[in-house]
Length: 405
Image 1 (cartoon, rainbow, N blue to C red):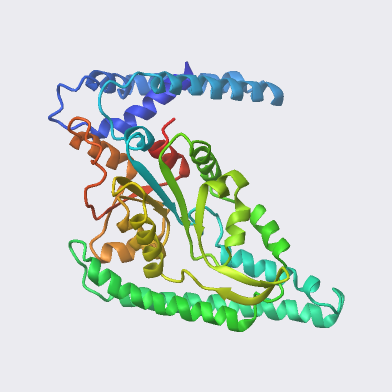
Image 2 (tube, rainbow, N blue to C red; image 1 turned 120 degrees about the vertical axis):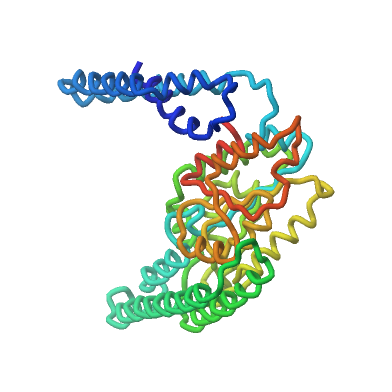
C-alpha cells in the first residue's frame, strides 16, 4: 500500500500544477483532485509512519528484505503506468516519435556533463602522481620528489590564472545591457573573448611542461576509474545497444585535452557506437611529449564541429538534433540543436545565456508545453526555432525523454 500511495501523491504534485483553469473537462481532473487532497496526504503519511513503527524491531537483514519489497512494489506500480496503451499522438520519447522515419542526432559534452570532475584536473593529477615513474633517477631521489612538488605548484598557478581570467570575462559580460530576445550575433561576438582566453590558458599548459612524460597506460587507467554522473553510462549503454534498430548517430564533442581519456571512460560497445571529437595528447612510444594536438578550444570551434556533422547527415535534413551540455563552452551548441538540454546547475552558463536573451525551462514543463501544442502526428514539434534551453537534474530525465522506460 505504501509505495502506490507515495507514487500517486508524487505524480499529482508533479502534474497537478500544470492543469489550467480552462481544463475543467480534463478526464484526469477527478483523479488529480482525489490523490492530491489533504485526506489522501494524511492517509499516506499515517501509512508511512505505521510502516516505520513496525520496522523498528527488525534486524538489519529483515530491513534489507523490507527495502527490496518496497522497491519491487514501487517498480510494479510504475509499470502499471508504463504498460498503458498510448492512444493519442505524443511528443516523447523521441525514439518512438522521431526515429521511426527520421534520424536522431544525439550530441553530448564530456567534462561535468558526463563526469563528476573536470578531466583537465584529472590529467594534471596523473602527471603529478606518475612523475617518479617517468623520472629515471628513482622514486626515492630528492630531485624526483621536488619535480612532483614543482608540478603541483605549477598546476595550482595555472588553475588560479584560469579562474582569474574567467572572472574577468564574466565581469565584462555583466557590464553589458541585457537583451530581451535572443541576439545570436552579439553572443558570438562576445564569446570570441572567451575563445582568446581559453587559447591563452591552453598555451600556458603546454609551455609549463605539465603533461610531459605521462604514460598512455596511466591515462587509460585514469579514464577507466573516472567517476561518471549517475545514469550517464547506463543511458549511453542503452543507446548503443539499440544502434542497429534505430536511425540515430551519437557524437561526443569536448574540450578535453585527451580523447584517449574519454575512450577509456566508457565500455568498448559505447565507444564503437559514438564518434568522439576532442583534442589529442601527442605521444612518442606511448609517452607524452607534453604537446597537445588542438582541435577544439572554444565555443566557436565546438559549434563548428557540430554544424559540420549536421551538414554531413545522411538524412537530407530530416533529422532532430539533441545536445546535452553543462557550461558556457556548450552554449552555442545548445542553441544550435533542436533541443538543448542543460544538466546540473552552472551559474556562469545561466548568466551568459540570460544576458543575451536565452531563457530556461525544466524539461518536464517543456514536454507538457509541446504536448499541448501537438496537432495530429506532427513530428516536427521539436524542430521549431527556440531560444529556450531545457534543464534537467539527472541523466534519468534525459533517458526518459529520449528512450522512454
